[in-house]
Length: 600
Image (cartoon, rainbow, N blue to C red; front, side, top):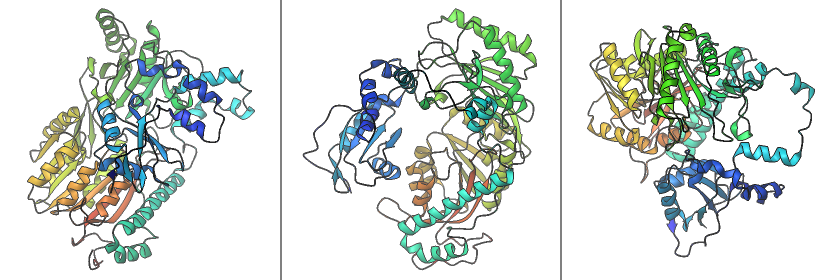
């Protein structure tokens, strides 16, 4: 338990990550010159959102503190960091926040606090140096770059970009599936260890499970492949920048990472996961921006205009293009003229055969929020939405709405979820992080009621329309943060046959949602869909850990797992994990006969 010490460690001047890194074994001369060069930090003075301006350094951490340890510790203080960065076995970390209020709150609460016998010291930290500027400065100090190897010179851009965005492109698909399945095995083996560490009462059951299932906490079914392995993405975000081949105003994927000092892009023409339809939109849009007098936006100089193009496509042949444009100091008359020429190009002139049915313009100038979804989208031409068909149902999709990027594999995923949820006409389904309502709507005809929860207002509006499109009246949607909305909904439900299905963002569910699920003991079954199982590990652990002062209610236990490949040619995979409340009589085929041990 943390406590406040009356005589905290005195403050020290703000430090940068580069200055801290200089304390580690390395040459610090370049770091010192960077720290004194204001151009290395000019990005914080352009009113663009960056959490780097709300950064603190926490020193004197307990030895062997890991990312999850620090994240949990801060969460107990009701702090929600934007980023956490630790340096190996060092006893300090950099933590950034989304605003000044959160940062100052952290400094007030944590500074002088004792954690595991250590008195913590918190002070302001300077932002990181701009990676682009850092690379430029390094090149200047080193002189002309050395000649690249013959192998690098000969490697075509098409291979380089394939390696960057689809790293498994050159691997047989069966081998891709085997590797992904092995990743899931390691996740379930780790979860078995964590359950043993956090819930001793489950050890007898867990020992039997590990013996039967290769040290995993539950049986893992064979991975389910994607129906299509190429051209499967229905949404792609392309950067508009200078091409790696030197061509100006190129739309494509970044060849390297910004933090590596690269902004060059390569067009998607030869990438295997982008659809032909999307490639056509990109090609035509590139032609259009090259006819304009406006330059691409430069993260080095913060000048220029064209920034990003998002393309969404459907199996019904529709396409949405959303272009992000920095207006800089252009007046409204110039912007209106640009939008008019864009509309004419894609509805009347050369671009009318591009397939674009919905065309949006987004002003992305001064960012005051970390969420791009907060930027208003202005319809320039065509319809306001596109429509997709999935499992015989129709869905409306707006610019900011979440919809699985692989429609065919999403049908496999949702069919699995429906099968595992064991629903009947008396069931009530809670669809948490429901997006446009796809999962709940696909199950609605089988159950008594569906309740969807979603943060994005635009997606909620789409979900409501989607329910109407499919003639469903037993479904309702609530807009808000799951951690705010979910507990109240759970408290108001008295349904005896209640199942929750959660499909959260990569970071997983907020701890408040997990605690609400644990408290609602009438909720017996939970289907968790994780697009990043390692990031969701804390959720899994908290669902299964022993009751405590913080965690109330009987724990869950994992009884069934399966991976669905929504992202061929990459290492990403969706994990479906079925969890049941301890003491609930399981009906799953694998574990229906297993008995709970005393105390479980």
